[in-house]
Image 1 (cartoon, helix red, strand yellow):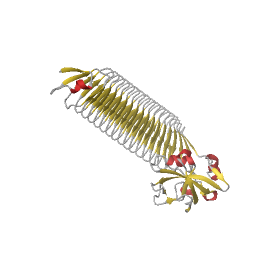
Image 2 (cartoon, helix red, strand yellow):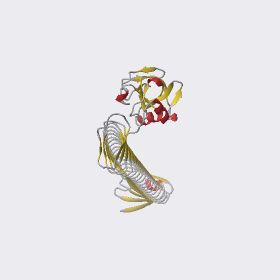
Image 3 (tube, rainbow, N blue to C red):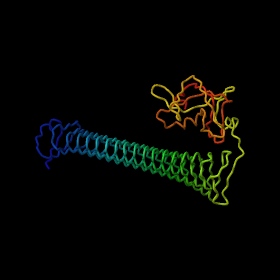
Image 4 (cartoon, rainbow, N blue to C red):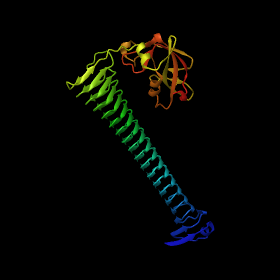
Length: 437
């Protein structure tokens, strides 16, 4: 292959070739390759190169490279590279890389990388990577990664990862991971994981995990887990678990479990379980302890060990108990409580349970309360303390928080109360701005 040394743009423009050639650029001047040849370009020292068509570029030191179409780029030192179309880029040291289309990028040291479409990215050091569409990303050290589409992400050290759609994520050390849709997540160290859709999550050490819908979760160490809908959860050590709806939970050692609705729990070791629903199924092994937090007869709790314990506390849940246990503001004979609602683009507020029921600021609403024996989720207007309402609607894209004035005499506190009550009357005072959350 013929080698041509170029020091200026004029030198390059004079070159006439009709076959492969190596263009070696030795200049601090910005060089633009305009001709439609399959050039091999090598830029030395602080050179700046812009390569178009199907050119291949190697850049050393502090070079700057822009490559279009099917270009291939290797950049070292503190180089900055932007590669488009089907380009392939390898960047070392503190390089910054932006790759689009079906590009493949490998960035090391403290590189920052953005990759679109079906890009493949491997970033080491303290790299920051954003990969979209069907990208696959591996990031080490203190890397931060965002992956969209069907992306697959493996992040280590103190990495932070957000993966959407059907992404698969493995995050280690102190990583933080958010995974949506059908994502699969493995997080170790002190990782924090939020997984939605049909996600499967395995979290180790002191991880915190929130899994919704049909998620499956395995948590080690001192993990804190909130599992909703049909989730399956296994928790070891000193984990804290909240199980909602039809979740199935197996808890070991010193874990604490809060079971609601139709959850199924197996408690082993010195696990403590608080049961808030008559429909919870619970099996107690070893030294497991269960607290029944309602008055109805419980028939679904089974002791498999003589050392297991069932406790029915002598607690009467009424208004006095509610106001003493939760941060409630009281003005005379009325209480200030809150309601999570959906807000439309037109500014209308709608109930989560019944989206045909709307609320307006300044209006008073009334409803018949079901008997107290029917529980907190029965017929009536549902309100709660601020934190409960904020947590209930925190992941809605159209979430709004309404402040309500409620006559104390109209409030029903049920035995399964966990911060939410029912009322037959409320007045909507205002929407709470986010800065007051």
